[in-house]
Amino acid sequence: MIDLVLVVAGLVLISIGVFYDFVGAIGLLRLPNFYTRLHAATAGAIGGAVVPMIGTALVALGADYLGPPRFFLAGAAFASSILLMVLAQAGSHAIARAAYISGEAPREPILHDALKDRGGE
Amino acid sequence: MEVVPISIAAIAALLSVVATYLAVRSRDMLAAVVFSAVQSTAYALIYYVLMAPDIVLVYIPVSVGILPAVAVLLIKKTERYES
Amino acid sequence: MVIEALVTSVLTVLIPIYVVSFLLYVVRVVKGPTIPDRVLAIDSLGYDLAAFMVVLSILLKSPLMVVSGLALALWVYAFDIYIAKYLEAKEMGE
Image (cartoon, rainbow over all chains, first blue to last red; front, side):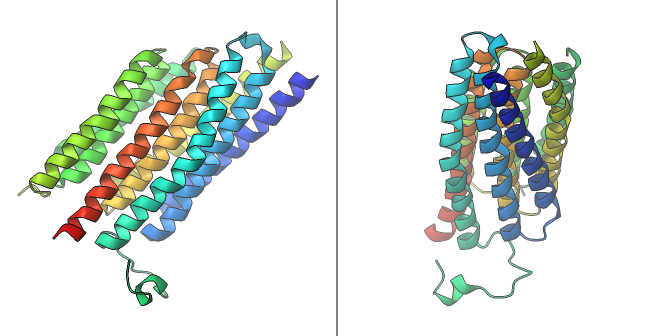
């Protein structure tokens, strides 16, 4: 009984992750600016990669037809999700800072640049 | 059940052809490095789907890690746009 | 036996949506007007591909194949840092 509960919870988490992934891809394709696309890309990375990995760990704990290596799968998926939760924002922040400093990406549809008023950087 | 890995491998192969063509034709060398990384990722997915995870573990650090590092260092020493 | 049928059927439905979103990411990589757009798209593509490999190792019933997802996530992050350092050093070094 507890196996079925774990498997259903994991499949629901994987479905939520697929939804985030699709929405992030559409937002990355349709938004007009680099700094708005950053929002869609980070939503796609966190919601589309961390949440399915936790769901996969739950499914692997519940699915007993995989044999004893399923505990290895669950541990590796959980460790990957924790590591990715740290790394995704760090990478996005690095590329956004580089794009702002070097002026590579155009800031065209903009209302107010608060970072420029504070003296660049 | 058997049709899923083969179809994923076929889609990744088509995508790597597009990425390779764009990497050859591009005038901006940094964009060529990015397209080369797309091709490497598609090949990694093909190796994974064909049940060879050890090849993936060797291919990823060489082709996503070391090759763009050397290429970016070379672009920094020389020039970025092809004249 | 009911668990295996449930997992296989649900994951088989979910796989094509993943593939379609990968194609949309690649469209942004090809179209992207500047370099940071392309790097951002390949960043998200790599992370989601790592999650896709982890999900696919359950569907293919081979749990030891999960390690390559971790390696892909780490090295895509390293690729991101390379391009970011190049873009910053070009402006500040002159």
